[in-house]
Image 1 (tube, rainbow, N blue to C red):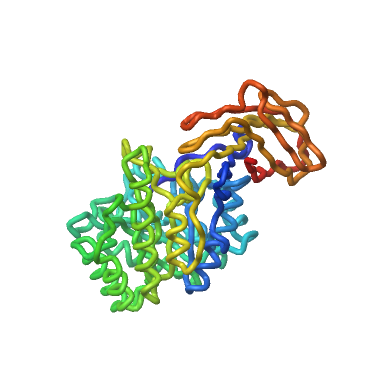
Image 2: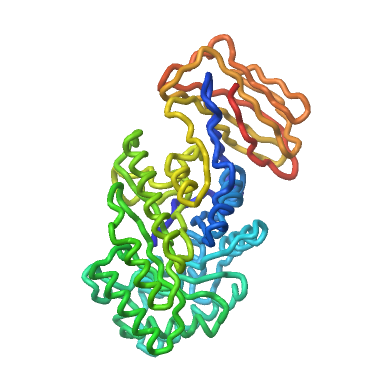
Length: 451
Protein backbone atom coordinates (compact mmCIF):
# COMPACT_ATOMS: atom_id res chain seq x y z
CA UNK A 1 0.00 0.00 0.00
CA UNK A 2 2.30 2.73 1.27
CA UNK A 3 5.92 3.72 1.15
CA UNK A 4 8.48 2.27 3.45
CA UNK A 5 10.71 4.88 4.94
CA UNK A 6 13.19 6.07 2.37
CA UNK A 7 16.50 4.29 2.85
CA UNK A 8 19.92 5.85 2.44
CA UNK A 9 21.77 5.07 -0.77
CA UNK A 10 24.45 2.41 -0.96
CA UNK A 11 27.11 5.05 -1.02
CA UNK A 12 25.80 6.94 1.97
CA UNK A 13 27.61 7.21 5.22
CA UNK A 14 25.29 4.98 7.14
CA UNK A 15 26.12 1.62 5.65
CA UNK A 16 24.55 -0.60 8.23
CA UNK A 17 23.06 -0.74 11.68
CA UNK A 18 22.97 -3.81 13.82
CA UNK A 19 21.52 -4.46 17.18
CA UNK A 20 21.75 -7.92 18.50
CA UNK A 21 20.14 -8.14 21.86
CA UNK A 22 22.50 -9.75 24.23
CA UNK A 23 21.13 -10.16 27.70
CA UNK A 24 23.19 -9.99 30.79
CA UNK A 25 23.44 -11.46 34.25
CA UNK A 26 21.29 -14.61 34.53
CA UNK A 27 19.26 -13.95 31.38
CA UNK A 28 19.81 -16.00 28.21
CA UNK A 29 20.86 -14.28 24.99
CA UNK A 30 18.08 -12.75 22.91
CA UNK A 31 17.74 -14.78 19.77
CA UNK A 32 15.43 -15.56 16.92
CA UNK A 33 13.57 -18.85 16.73
CA UNK A 34 15.78 -21.88 16.26
CA UNK A 35 14.23 -22.51 12.83
CA UNK A 36 13.98 -19.55 10.41
CA UNK A 37 10.47 -18.29 9.77
CA UNK A 38 10.75 -19.15 6.06
CA UNK A 39 11.41 -22.81 6.88
CA UNK A 40 8.56 -22.92 9.38
CA UNK A 41 6.22 -21.39 6.79
CA UNK A 42 7.36 -23.82 4.09
CA UNK A 43 6.55 -26.74 6.39
CA UNK A 44 2.98 -25.36 6.55
CA UNK A 45 2.83 -24.92 2.78
CA UNK A 46 2.97 -21.13 3.11
CA UNK A 47 5.20 -18.27 2.01
CA UNK A 48 6.35 -15.59 4.45
CA UNK A 49 7.48 -12.32 2.97
CA UNK A 50 8.59 -8.82 3.80
CA UNK A 51 8.62 -5.50 1.99
CA UNK A 52 12.15 -4.16 1.68
CA UNK A 53 14.12 -1.05 0.84
CA UNK A 54 16.79 -2.00 -1.70
CA UNK A 55 19.52 0.29 -0.42
CA UNK A 56 19.37 -1.33 3.01
CA UNK A 57 19.91 -4.92 1.84
CA UNK A 58 23.27 -5.26 3.54
CA UNK A 59 24.57 -5.91 7.04
CA UNK A 60 22.06 -7.02 9.64
CA UNK A 61 19.05 -5.79 7.63
CA UNK A 62 20.09 -7.86 4.64
CA UNK A 63 20.99 -10.80 6.83
CA UNK A 64 17.55 -10.94 8.44
CA UNK A 65 15.73 -10.32 5.16
CA UNK A 66 17.61 -13.14 3.48
CA UNK A 67 17.48 -15.66 6.32
CA UNK A 68 13.97 -15.26 7.68
CA UNK A 69 11.77 -14.60 4.63
CA UNK A 70 10.94 -16.59 1.50
CA UNK A 71 9.48 -13.68 -0.46
CA UNK A 72 10.38 -10.02 -0.97
CA UNK A 73 8.11 -7.16 -2.03
CA UNK A 74 9.79 -3.95 -3.25
CA UNK A 75 8.38 -1.23 -1.02
CA UNK A 76 8.70 1.52 -3.62
CA UNK A 77 11.11 0.31 -6.28
CA UNK A 78 8.55 -0.95 -8.81
CA UNK A 79 6.02 1.86 -8.54
CA UNK A 80 5.46 3.98 -11.62
CA UNK A 81 6.98 7.21 -10.28
CA UNK A 82 10.17 5.27 -9.46
CA UNK A 83 10.62 3.30 -12.66
CA UNK A 84 9.59 6.03 -15.13
CA UNK A 85 10.01 9.42 -13.43
CA UNK A 86 10.33 11.12 -16.83
CA UNK A 87 8.31 9.84 -19.75
CA UNK A 88 10.35 7.32 -21.70
CA UNK A 89 13.26 7.41 -19.23
CA UNK A 90 13.45 4.39 -16.94
CA UNK A 91 15.18 3.70 -13.65
CA UNK A 92 15.27 0.01 -12.77
CA UNK A 93 18.26 0.15 -10.43
CA UNK A 94 16.59 -0.57 -7.08
CA UNK A 95 14.07 -3.02 -8.52
CA UNK A 96 16.88 -4.96 -10.22
CA UNK A 97 18.86 -4.93 -6.97
CA UNK A 98 15.97 -6.45 -5.01
CA UNK A 99 15.35 -9.11 -7.65
CA UNK A 100 19.06 -10.03 -7.68
CA UNK A 101 19.12 -10.24 -3.88
CA UNK A 102 16.07 -12.51 -3.93
CA UNK A 103 17.61 -14.77 -6.54
CA UNK A 104 20.80 -15.02 -4.50
CA UNK A 105 18.79 -16.02 -1.41
CA UNK A 106 16.37 -18.42 -3.12
CA UNK A 107 13.41 -16.11 -2.58
CA UNK A 108 10.33 -15.20 -4.55
CA UNK A 109 9.54 -11.62 -5.52
CA UNK A 110 6.07 -10.08 -5.39
CA UNK A 111 5.77 -7.18 -7.83
CA UNK A 112 4.12 -4.08 -6.37
CA UNK A 113 2.27 -2.34 -7.97
CA UNK A 114 1.28 -1.74 -11.59
CA UNK A 115 -1.95 0.32 -11.41
CA UNK A 116 -2.54 2.66 -8.49
CA UNK A 117 -3.94 6.12 -7.88
CA UNK A 118 -0.86 7.13 -5.87
CA UNK A 119 2.90 7.43 -6.45
CA UNK A 120 2.50 8.06 -10.16
CA UNK A 121 4.94 10.35 -12.02
CA UNK A 122 3.95 13.99 -12.34
CA UNK A 123 4.14 13.86 -16.13
CA UNK A 124 1.31 11.33 -16.02
CA UNK A 125 -0.90 12.91 -13.38
CA UNK A 126 -0.47 16.44 -14.71
CA UNK A 127 -1.14 15.48 -18.31
CA UNK A 128 -4.35 15.85 -20.29
CA UNK A 129 -5.19 12.55 -21.96
CA UNK A 130 -7.98 11.16 -24.06
CA UNK A 131 -9.32 7.74 -23.05
CA UNK A 132 -7.44 6.16 -25.95
CA UNK A 133 -4.18 7.84 -24.92
CA UNK A 134 -4.64 6.86 -21.29
CA UNK A 135 -5.34 3.27 -22.23
CA UNK A 136 -2.24 3.18 -24.42
CA UNK A 137 -0.07 4.65 -21.66
CA UNK A 138 -1.32 2.10 -19.13
CA UNK A 139 -0.89 -0.84 -21.47
CA UNK A 140 2.63 0.28 -22.37
CA UNK A 141 3.58 0.70 -18.71
CA UNK A 142 2.26 -2.73 -17.70
CA UNK A 143 3.79 -4.46 -20.70
CA UNK A 144 7.17 -2.80 -20.27
CA UNK A 145 7.52 -3.55 -16.58
CA UNK A 146 6.07 -7.05 -16.53
CA UNK A 147 8.09 -8.06 -19.59
CA UNK A 148 11.31 -6.83 -17.97
CA UNK A 149 10.82 -9.24 -15.07
CA UNK A 150 9.13 -12.04 -17.01
CA UNK A 151 9.87 -15.37 -15.38
CA UNK A 152 11.54 -13.72 -12.38
CA UNK A 153 8.50 -12.72 -10.30
CA UNK A 154 6.03 -15.08 -8.66
CA UNK A 155 3.17 -12.60 -8.50
CA UNK A 156 2.07 -9.04 -9.25
CA UNK A 157 -0.23 -6.73 -7.35
CA UNK A 158 -1.69 -5.60 -10.66
CA UNK A 159 -4.45 -3.27 -9.44
CA UNK A 160 -4.08 -1.57 -6.07
CA UNK A 161 -6.89 -0.06 -3.98
CA UNK A 162 -9.73 0.28 -6.50
CA UNK A 163 -12.55 0.74 -3.95
CA UNK A 164 -13.90 3.31 -1.51
CA UNK A 165 -14.90 2.27 1.99
CA UNK A 166 -18.57 1.94 0.99
CA UNK A 167 -17.75 -0.43 -1.87
CA UNK A 168 -18.08 2.07 -4.70
CA UNK A 169 -15.24 2.50 -7.16
CA UNK A 170 -12.59 5.00 -6.12
CA UNK A 171 -12.47 8.12 -8.27
CA UNK A 172 -9.02 7.92 -9.86
CA UNK A 173 -7.21 8.79 -13.07
CA UNK A 174 -7.94 5.26 -14.26
CA UNK A 175 -11.58 4.90 -13.25
CA UNK A 176 -12.48 8.40 -14.43
CA UNK A 177 -10.67 7.99 -17.73
CA UNK A 178 -11.34 4.35 -18.59
CA UNK A 179 -14.28 3.21 -16.47
CA UNK A 180 -14.34 0.20 -14.19
CA UNK A 181 -13.12 -2.11 -16.95
CA UNK A 182 -9.60 -0.72 -16.55
CA UNK A 183 -9.18 -3.50 -13.98
CA UNK A 184 -9.97 -6.28 -16.45
CA UNK A 185 -7.81 -4.62 -19.10
CA UNK A 186 -4.85 -4.32 -16.73
CA UNK A 187 -5.07 -7.98 -15.72
CA UNK A 188 -5.32 -9.04 -19.36
CA UNK A 189 -2.29 -7.00 -20.37
CA UNK A 190 -0.23 -8.27 -17.44
CA UNK A 191 -1.11 -11.87 -18.25
CA UNK A 192 -0.08 -11.37 -21.87
CA UNK A 193 3.29 -10.01 -20.77
CA UNK A 194 4.02 -12.88 -18.33
CA UNK A 195 1.56 -15.78 -18.40
CA UNK A 196 3.38 -17.53 -15.53
CA UNK A 197 3.02 -14.74 -12.94
CA UNK A 198 0.09 -14.88 -10.51
CA UNK A 199 -2.05 -11.76 -10.80
CA UNK A 200 -3.71 -10.09 -7.80
CA UNK A 201 -6.04 -7.26 -6.91
CA UNK A 202 -4.86 -5.68 -3.65
CA UNK A 203 -6.72 -3.45 -1.19
CA UNK A 204 -6.88 -2.34 2.46
CA UNK A 205 -9.74 -2.50 5.00
CA UNK A 206 -10.95 -5.64 3.22
CA UNK A 207 -9.64 -8.08 5.81
CA UNK A 208 -13.04 -8.72 7.42
CA UNK A 209 -16.48 -9.12 5.87
CA UNK A 210 -17.75 -5.60 5.15
CA UNK A 211 -19.06 -3.43 2.32
CA UNK A 212 -15.63 -2.89 0.80
CA UNK A 213 -14.56 -6.54 0.91
CA UNK A 214 -17.94 -7.60 -0.49
CA UNK A 215 -17.47 -5.23 -3.42
CA UNK A 216 -14.06 -6.81 -4.01
CA UNK A 217 -15.62 -10.26 -3.72
CA UNK A 218 -18.26 -9.40 -6.31
CA UNK A 219 -15.64 -7.96 -8.65
CA UNK A 220 -13.47 -11.07 -8.46
CA UNK A 221 -16.52 -13.31 -8.98
CA UNK A 222 -17.46 -11.30 -12.06
CA UNK A 223 -13.92 -11.38 -13.46
CA UNK A 224 -13.76 -15.15 -13.00
CA UNK A 225 -17.11 -15.58 -14.76
CA UNK A 226 -15.88 -13.45 -17.67
CA UNK A 227 -12.66 -15.43 -18.01
CA UNK A 228 -10.42 -12.48 -17.08
CA UNK A 229 -7.06 -13.70 -15.75
CA UNK A 230 -7.23 -13.20 -11.97
CA UNK A 231 -5.32 -15.53 -9.67
CA UNK A 232 -5.58 -13.97 -6.25
CA UNK A 233 -6.73 -11.33 -3.82
CA UNK A 234 -4.40 -9.36 -1.59
CA UNK A 235 -5.63 -8.29 1.85
CA UNK A 236 -3.21 -5.60 2.96
CA UNK A 237 -3.86 -5.85 6.72
CA UNK A 238 -2.57 -2.50 7.96
CA UNK A 239 -4.17 -3.11 11.34
CA UNK A 240 -4.50 -1.30 14.67
CA UNK A 241 -3.61 -2.94 17.97
CA UNK A 242 -6.46 -5.10 19.25
CA UNK A 243 -8.54 -4.73 16.09
CA UNK A 244 -7.98 -7.90 14.06
CA UNK A 245 -11.37 -8.50 12.38
CA UNK A 246 -13.23 -11.46 13.88
CA UNK A 247 -14.33 -12.46 10.37
CA UNK A 248 -10.80 -12.59 8.91
CA UNK A 249 -10.68 -16.37 8.42
CA UNK A 250 -14.27 -16.43 7.12
CA UNK A 251 -13.40 -13.72 4.62
CA UNK A 252 -10.25 -15.52 3.43
CA UNK A 253 -12.29 -18.67 2.97
CA UNK A 254 -15.04 -17.02 0.91
CA UNK A 255 -12.49 -15.64 -1.55
CA UNK A 256 -10.77 -19.02 -1.69
CA UNK A 257 -14.13 -20.61 -2.50
CA UNK A 258 -14.22 -18.48 -5.66
CA UNK A 259 -11.19 -20.42 -6.86
CA UNK A 260 -8.51 -17.79 -6.21
CA UNK A 261 -5.58 -17.61 -3.83
CA UNK A 262 -5.55 -15.16 -0.95
CA UNK A 263 -2.46 -13.45 0.40
CA UNK A 264 -1.98 -11.16 3.38
CA UNK A 265 0.20 -8.67 1.55
CA UNK A 266 1.16 -5.74 3.83
CA UNK A 267 0.71 -6.77 7.44
CA UNK A 268 1.65 -4.40 10.23
CA UNK A 269 -0.09 -3.74 13.54
CA UNK A 270 0.42 -0.22 14.85
CA UNK A 271 0.12 0.98 18.42
CA UNK A 272 0.32 4.30 20.22
CA UNK A 273 3.92 4.83 21.24
CA UNK A 274 5.80 4.37 23.41
CA UNK A 275 5.27 0.63 23.48
CA UNK A 276 5.13 -1.30 26.72
CA UNK A 277 4.88 -4.94 27.72
CA UNK A 278 1.06 -4.91 27.69
CA UNK A 279 0.89 -3.47 24.18
CA UNK A 280 3.59 -5.81 22.89
CA UNK A 281 1.73 -8.80 24.34
CA UNK A 282 -1.48 -7.72 22.60
CA UNK A 283 0.42 -7.13 19.37
CA UNK A 284 1.86 -10.65 19.57
CA UNK A 285 -1.65 -12.07 20.00
CA UNK A 286 -2.84 -10.04 17.00
CA UNK A 287 0.00 -11.23 14.77
CA UNK A 288 -0.71 -14.80 15.80
CA UNK A 289 -4.41 -14.38 15.01
CA UNK A 290 -3.62 -13.20 11.47
CA UNK A 291 -1.14 -16.01 10.82
CA UNK A 292 -3.50 -18.58 12.36
CA UNK A 293 -6.26 -17.49 9.98
CA UNK A 294 -3.98 -17.92 6.98
CA UNK A 295 -2.66 -21.28 8.15
CA UNK A 296 -6.25 -22.52 8.55
CA UNK A 297 -7.20 -21.91 4.89
CA UNK A 298 -5.42 -24.02 2.31
CA UNK A 299 -5.65 -21.38 -0.43
CA UNK A 300 -4.14 -18.67 1.77
CA UNK A 301 -0.82 -18.41 -0.03
CA UNK A 302 1.07 -16.69 2.75
CA UNK A 303 1.72 -13.51 4.71
CA UNK A 304 3.96 -10.55 3.91
CA UNK A 305 4.83 -8.04 6.62
CA UNK A 306 5.18 -4.44 5.45
CA UNK A 307 8.74 -4.05 6.63
CA UNK A 308 10.11 -6.37 9.30
CA UNK A 309 11.81 -3.74 11.48
CA UNK A 310 10.37 -0.62 13.11
CA UNK A 311 13.26 1.39 11.65
CA UNK A 312 11.90 0.75 8.14
CA UNK A 313 8.19 1.23 8.80
CA UNK A 314 5.97 3.84 7.15
CA UNK A 315 3.67 4.12 10.16
CA UNK A 316 5.41 6.89 12.20
CA UNK A 317 5.59 9.14 9.14
CA UNK A 318 1.87 8.85 8.41
CA UNK A 319 0.08 8.17 11.71
CA UNK A 320 1.20 10.71 14.30
CA UNK A 321 1.82 9.13 17.69
CA UNK A 322 1.76 5.58 16.33
CA UNK A 323 4.53 3.11 15.54
CA UNK A 324 6.23 -0.09 16.75
CA UNK A 325 4.16 -1.94 14.12
CA UNK A 326 6.53 -4.67 12.91
CA UNK A 327 7.97 -7.94 14.34
CA UNK A 328 11.46 -6.49 15.02
CA UNK A 329 12.33 -3.34 16.94
CA UNK A 330 14.45 -0.51 15.54
CA UNK A 331 17.61 -2.28 16.71
CA UNK A 332 16.69 -5.50 14.85
CA UNK A 333 15.83 -7.38 18.03
CA UNK A 334 12.86 -9.75 17.65
CA UNK A 335 9.77 -8.60 19.53
CA UNK A 336 7.05 -10.80 21.08
CA UNK A 337 5.25 -10.58 17.73
CA UNK A 338 8.14 -12.43 16.10
CA UNK A 339 7.84 -15.33 18.51
CA UNK A 340 4.06 -15.37 18.05
CA UNK A 341 4.55 -15.73 14.29
CA UNK A 342 7.00 -18.59 14.85
CA UNK A 343 4.51 -20.25 17.19
CA UNK A 344 1.67 -19.96 14.67
CA UNK A 345 3.87 -21.61 12.06
CA UNK A 346 4.70 -24.50 14.38
CA UNK A 347 8.03 -23.31 15.70
CA UNK A 348 9.31 -23.15 19.24
CA UNK A 349 11.41 -20.46 20.86
CA UNK A 350 11.68 -18.70 24.18
CA UNK A 351 11.33 -14.91 24.05
CA UNK A 352 13.91 -13.00 26.06
CA UNK A 353 12.77 -11.56 29.39
CA UNK A 354 11.65 -7.95 29.47
CA UNK A 355 14.59 -6.67 31.53
CA UNK A 356 17.70 -6.63 29.37
CA UNK A 357 20.79 -4.79 28.25
CA UNK A 358 21.61 -4.65 24.56
CA UNK A 359 24.59 -3.76 22.40
CA UNK A 360 23.98 -1.86 19.16
CA UNK A 361 26.78 -1.82 16.55
CA UNK A 362 26.62 0.84 13.86
CA UNK A 363 28.85 2.15 11.09
CA UNK A 364 28.94 5.93 11.42
CA UNK A 365 30.95 6.70 8.29
CA UNK A 366 32.95 4.75 5.72
CA UNK A 367 35.57 5.53 3.09
CA UNK A 368 37.70 3.55 0.64
CA UNK A 369 40.02 1.93 3.18
CA UNK A 370 38.45 2.54 6.56
CA UNK A 371 35.41 3.33 8.63
CA UNK A 372 34.32 4.74 11.97
CA UNK A 373 32.09 2.55 14.09
CA UNK A 374 30.15 2.92 17.31
CA UNK A 375 28.66 0.56 19.87
CA UNK A 376 25.87 1.69 22.17
CA UNK A 377 25.12 -0.28 25.33
CA UNK A 378 21.65 0.38 26.74
CA UNK A 379 19.71 -1.13 29.63
CA UNK A 380 15.96 -1.40 30.23
CA UNK A 381 14.76 -3.26 33.29
CA UNK A 382 18.35 -4.15 34.17
CA UNK A 383 21.62 -2.42 35.09
CA UNK A 384 25.37 -2.99 34.76
CA UNK A 385 28.36 -2.20 36.94
CA UNK A 386 30.79 -3.21 34.18
CA UNK A 387 30.57 -4.48 30.63
CA UNK A 388 32.44 -6.28 27.90
CA UNK A 389 31.43 -6.53 24.23
CA UNK A 390 32.58 -9.23 21.82
CA UNK A 391 32.26 -9.72 18.09
CA UNK A 392 34.02 -11.48 15.24
CA UNK A 393 34.72 -9.74 11.97
CA UNK A 394 33.80 -11.67 8.85
CA UNK A 395 35.78 -9.86 6.16
CA UNK A 396 39.21 -9.06 7.59
CA UNK A 397 38.36 -5.72 9.23
CA UNK A 398 40.97 -4.49 11.74
CA UNK A 399 40.47 -1.98 14.56
CA UNK A 400 43.16 0.72 14.50
CA UNK A 401 41.98 3.04 17.25
CA UNK A 402 39.29 3.08 19.96
CA UNK A 403 37.93 5.60 22.47
CA UNK A 404 35.81 5.24 25.62
CA UNK A 405 36.68 1.52 25.72
CA UNK A 406 39.70 -0.77 25.93
CA UNK A 407 39.61 -2.79 22.71
CA UNK A 408 41.83 -5.69 21.70
CA UNK A 409 41.74 -7.81 18.56
CA UNK A 410 43.14 -11.30 18.07
CA UNK A 411 42.67 -12.47 14.52
CA UNK A 412 39.05 -11.78 13.69
CA UNK A 413 37.91 -11.73 17.34
CA UNK A 414 37.37 -8.33 18.98
CA UNK A 415 36.82 -7.65 22.68
CA UNK A 416 36.05 -4.20 24.06
CA UNK A 417 35.72 -3.57 27.80
CA UNK A 418 34.56 -0.47 29.64
CA UNK A 419 36.96 2.29 30.56
CA UNK A 420 37.45 3.16 34.24
CA UNK A 421 34.85 5.91 34.06
CA UNK A 422 31.95 4.36 32.08
CA UNK A 423 31.39 0.84 33.38
CA UNK A 424 28.11 1.71 35.10
CA UNK A 425 24.98 1.57 32.94
CA UNK A 426 21.84 2.31 35.00
CA UNK A 427 18.37 1.01 34.28
CA UNK A 428 17.11 3.21 31.46
CA UNK A 429 20.62 4.53 30.70
CA UNK A 430 23.24 3.94 28.03
CA UNK A 431 26.92 4.44 27.18
CA UNK A 432 28.70 4.49 23.84
CA UNK A 433 32.22 3.90 22.60
CA UNK A 434 33.74 4.38 19.19
CA UNK A 435 36.56 3.11 17.03
CA UNK A 436 38.28 3.43 13.68
CA UNK A 437 38.99 0.35 11.61
CA UNK A 438 40.24 -0.70 8.19
CA UNK A 439 38.30 -2.72 5.64
CA UNK A 440 38.69 -3.98 2.09
CA UNK A 441 36.16 -5.44 -0.29
CA UNK A 442 33.20 -5.62 2.04
CA UNK A 443 32.21 -4.53 5.52
CA UNK A 444 29.46 -6.82 6.82
CA UNK A 445 28.01 -5.99 10.22
CA UNK A 446 29.08 -8.52 12.86
CA UNK A 447 27.00 -10.22 15.52
CA UNK A 448 27.59 -8.50 18.87
CA UNK A 449 27.31 -10.09 22.29
CA UNK A 450 27.62 -8.72 25.80
CA UNK A 451 29.41 -10.77 28.38
